[in-house]
Image (cartoon, rainbow, N blue to C red):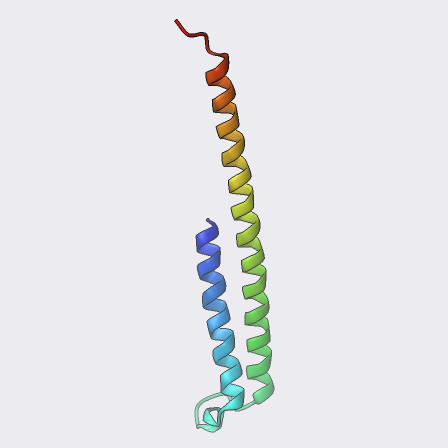
Length: 86
C-alpha cells in the first residue's frame, strides 16, 4: 500500500513541476492552451501539496505495517517458546 502512495506522490509531484515549468516557459502563450500564468502556478502548487500529503500518508502506512509485522513476529516467537517440546 505504501508503495502505491509513493508512486502517486511521485506522479503528482512530476505534474506539479511540469505546471511550474509552464509558467517559466513561453509555451503557455500558444493558442488552445490556458494562457493565465496564475492558473498554472495554482495547479502546480496544489499538485505539489497533494504529493506531500500522499508522501506523508505513505510513510505513515509503511511505519504502521512495520510495527504490525514486528508485533506478529514477537507473538510467534513467544508462542514458540511457550510450546512444550516432546
